[in-house]
Length: 377
Image (cartoon, rainbow, N blue to C red; front, side, top):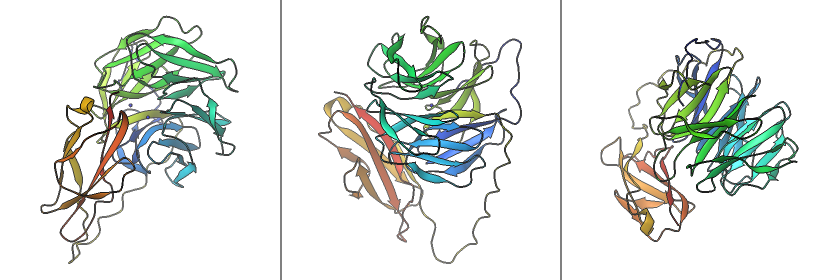
């Protein structure tokens, strides 16, 4: 569905018991750290396919799986993972929760809603957006981004879907906002960028939607998802795989507050309740005589500069010499391939390329290297 740190001159530290969570899209996992940026746990939750956003309440963690069209949920300590908590969606890329309901955004634009237990899903709760990427709630409204070109918009409606205001905030000079957060004073959004990473976070007045400032915070790198905790604003930098933080007045910006060890992170959430530490990682298995180690696949380059002509070219490699590869584009059948792999005649829109390495012993990488890209119209 990605963060800069801001601190005021009179800095107010967040409670030590808070945790920062983010979606590590390319590694199919939810990670977390302490609120001071320490103790990064990479594999806090191993999820499904392309988690793009994350939300948290006092009991559960929720995430949106962009490629498997599901909402996942786990206990706040990372146990009880249910990667198909809500199913049958269409490219969900944002998720938000309150005490009674779950809301999600989708690339086709619709905002969905279900009861907090996942029942009674309404996939078309709000149909006022042409392409949304991010959703947030407060005590009276649900908010969403609308990537409608330039300008783009922040829309809002009542929690029951009434009183729709699809153009509540007009965002000047922004074509691809992805991520929204709100407090009693301001609405904040992240400008992910269209053909290249944007560098900005914006804000506007919560009560009126006025005073939109698309350049509220700069120097980010593909910000994709934004969250609030007290007087601090957090966001995920998909370009540098860092969490940024700042004070909500735009001071004390730190674009590298957390080094996530992730790949194309997108979406972040903050939980202020004390939670137990992550369980220890299992010990490494004993050395086996036979080769049972799976290779790791990496995309070195792609999709190239010819997207406007419907052409995409990918170069990839394996961590083990002599590996062969299997490639898959979108929902096409996976087939053997060699690097580089070129696709032509691609239709405009979003696409997903995946590649698996297979070593000489026949061990296949269980987590393919992935690359999302967009062919312009």
